[in-house]
Image: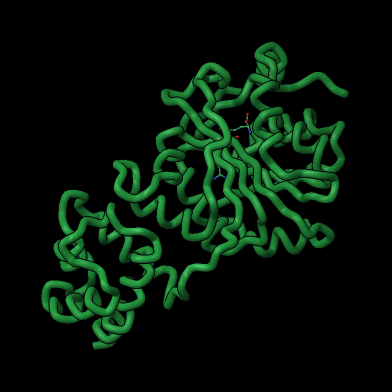
Length: 297
Ligand code: SAM
């Protein structure tokens, strides 16, 4: 077993060796606590038959823990200054492949097909760059990447929003978008002190696993999320007000909106934060035909 990268001393040694300076704009906060890493990995369902995707390996602190347990690890890293570092630190782990790529621009289906043809089970494990937490999560979910679990670290506040239930302050369009696809659970809370440099906020690790129960059929997922986002346009306002303002030509088509509320059996005087995902699906499905008419008309 090699010495862990994720101790403050070894990390400083590596950073000094390569003259590496952190880029705040790339969300670079590296983990320097092996216990936290053990803990993160223990929440992921990984065996030698599992393929792991990591986003942002940094100098490889989490990557090496994953490599010890998984069959193969493929890590997306955007910062070219980290490539020689990773080549060095990952040299004991032939099952690690680093892709120099912006994960948001990656073709996930192609990467999975090319890299994980022999792997049935794929999980994502990452200490995410916090400036793009939500787009990364939504990319994996909306593109329907063949991934059975995501174990991801993010700002605690975002984790709270993702896991929130109706009629709470944190519940909103992000809670609905993620919970529509996945069961979301907080696996652990992580203090600022285990990172170099320390972030400004507390972090949390979420475990997202595929939903087993089926929701009613959704006419169009993008449209569902347009409706949920529009419903939270002004949190204090009613659905009736928010949807009139946010749907195209909403103000001119109040009757169609009213009809959709009737069809969905949802009271337009409610606020978005009180609706369950099933109610949002019913409402979006009822609005969808009218919305198309409006677009075409
Ligand atoms: N995994 C390491 C750790 O836990 O110590 C580093 C995590 S650090 C929070 C985030 C990493 O994501 C950095 O290495 C950063 O360069 C990388 N990164 C930032 N934006 C990225 C993007 N769009 N695509 C891929 N990697 C990115």
